[in-house]
Figure: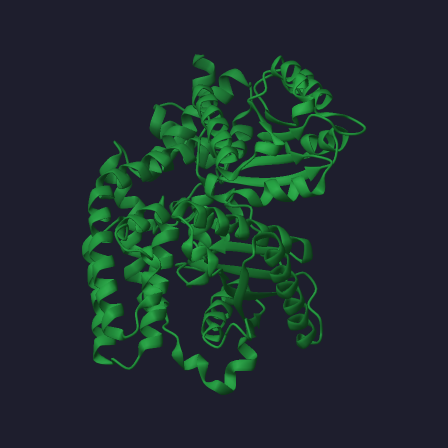
Length: 532
């Protein structure tokens, strides 16, 4: 993800910028904040952010000095600067422009729309610069969302796939325990706002939720739809008394709710699942939190699964992981036939049991969340399905019986299948293009079919099929060809020894490297060196 640093000596300005727009939606991660230029320089040295939003007037070292220092040390291409100014300091903008800053924003005029527009321009500039330099431009937030949806719904094919993806996304799961929270941002007043205002309100609220929870403990936050979210609380040192852990979570959620009320006049309704000890069990905690959520009310908005056991709430959930193979394949391959067959089977199941309203609603919501998270631009695509419906896709929450839910799901599946049909061919080729880029960027690693497939969240057999169909040579042959081309460069230009090249490129031994080299080049590495 693109890294953003915020530099301002006013804490409220920092919080305001953090919560003003949905940064994750733009593929941006806020990597830190600083109260002056001197503090910012330390963070820049450690993190090397791509974008810096800085106030021009600050104590110790102001924004202009910060920009000047960075330009002297890092040149004009990196990082991109956006300056914050007040009307009385506007004369400083002229000087800042001489240092090739990307844009400036007047604090009193700053709105979510202006900030988002500014960031999109800067992202476009970064993207063009990377393309010129031949660097990859990725939407890693899409991989993040897909990863967490797979984690919450138990959709990983194996523990190896989970470990490889979490490693490549730099996600830490070396904690002693985890607890999931499923929640909704509630605002009666927001229902009367235009769609864009609603989106701005809820994305800002979720951003604040991310910021606030991170202050208490390591937490992963995922937007499920415009109003619903999931939190994964991670515990470094687990208390011997579980009740203390739950009390701590309750305190965090109440504090967060109070802050959201003060800032945005919204409330939280949420439920907390069970305490689990492994990442693989996080899906259980998530399912329990969704089940407990059925007991949450306006009078009692924060509930715990452990306290709802006696109400038999746990019998009212729908385990979508039973359909995980078919649904994963449908989204993975953009296969409309598998998608419609899977959803049709689910609908038939509920029509057979018309009294299972809660389970049917749970199934529909899960499919909705999967679609929003697993599809690129999922939010806008799904919203488009219901553009003529006043409540949009949130109309699912208005369905009052199983038959209505089944009809909603049927319509949803038809429109989703149309999207799959349109994207299917291009998507397959796009996967192969991205895999080729990934291979070329990681030639110094040991690359296997299973590992690369795991990085992209697809099955090894499917990747192998795609590569054979949309590439001139097979997967393994492509890797070996790229590695041997790089080996020739290292031997010739870097003057590395054969065993050093083998080690650098991740071959299991110098012998195996020489064998592959001779197979592709017709001569051994030593003979190649002598000939050149």
